Image 1 (tube, helix red, strand yellow):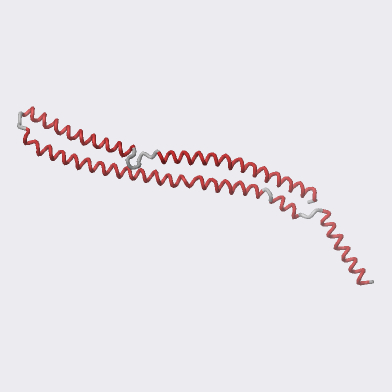
Image 2 (cartoon, rainbow, N blue to C red; image 1 turned 60 degrees about the horizontal axis):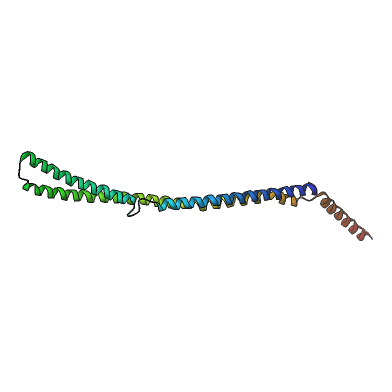
Length: 192
């Protein structure tokens, strides 16, 4: 390859490298914007977690369980009142039944509240684990993007580096001429 071809390869490699670097810079800027948007959305999602203590899930479960307990107590009272009206029986003996029904309702309520709290903790833990895993994505994307952009840009310079190593015609001719001249002078000096 002659010097002019070598220069063309070198220039083309430099132009390609510059083009790849410009594309990498544009991609990097666009991806930075997308990563920022992703992080904002992730933060908003995690901040809106309904399973935090005192959050929406817990308030709803408390309301549901309290309403169920109240409805159970009210139903027991209505049942006993209706039974007393139909039978004409004295309701004074129902006090023990009502007290036991209320105790059972309290136990049931405590059990349901414990189950609801366990479900809340499990769901909150799941969201937190998702948040930790999802938070790793931006750093991974940035590392891969930088590595790819820099690699393409540097890789495009390889032909230029190889072309620069290739001696041109005049380099080889000059080396050959100088070597021959040196040998001729050495022979002439030795003979004379």
